[in-house]
Image 1: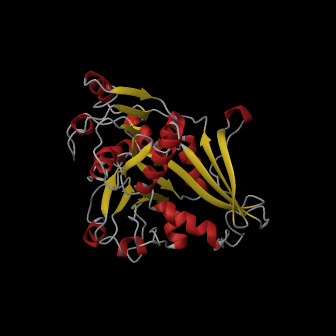
Image 2: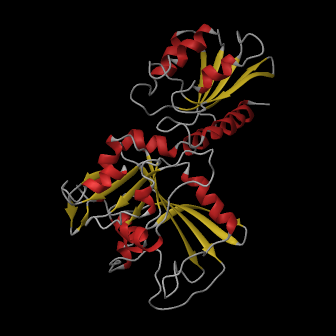
Image 3: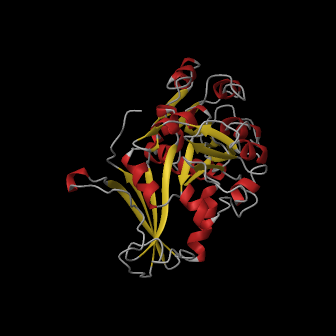
Length: 368
């Protein structure tokens, strides 16, 4: 096996921490000596051992003279755990192979420099794109201090998210819906508009009890969320944030007593200021959001430039109807050059449904 083979194994290990490490990155580590793997590890959860220390703890023989493969540059500062660079040097590792440099200001090349100063051979950039891709959320959050937003919607082959009567359950099959529930555990928060709450009365939770439920964010400028809605009734068990333009008055007291948190933010053009909201959520260490909004919210989110990726499920069904809703509504664009474009699409089949994941290439960024 060569460097790329061992790094692929480290990547596989890193993904085991998906949904549990935020706001830390997912990291995997493999330790090799004399052509044999003597230890492996990954970052299991936030506050737990980092991948390098995890791998060193589980070595079945001394790591002196070994090569350590890690998907992200080892940390060199004290956080929840001591610096991994110290552990690597103490174990007398001979060579460290790093997938990608850590963008965090506290690390960002400093870990590499410390290892080299300690006489350790360092190789950087093995499967770099793959190592960055698995931590797209972490890289975005560190650089912008705002959540990484994935917009998700399911539609029919003719581009409808509901029938003319508003019926939408179920557009996709069981396999696609199971993936969505799993993904909810991969994001720190899930966000919907008041329209979704009023129409569907969703729980916005994960079906898999082993996963961490996301923080629920309800965009409700006029504070119309019913007190008997599932998101309010279960707020003591699952953190729920109601975002409104209303000030904190006696009208908000019942929501607070139910366990909800109220966040008042300004409006822009008669709608909640989404770029402002992203900054506020970033201050709360919310690094990622799964946006399951309606068509109006989807367009506004794209228009305001807060969406990084779009996940589209297409079911082999046709609803028809000129007034049946589409995934992205709102005012729409007036001219083709103004359109929001996507790139780097990946396409797969989930049962009978098609799944497309796209990166948002062009957005209309607004100053807040």
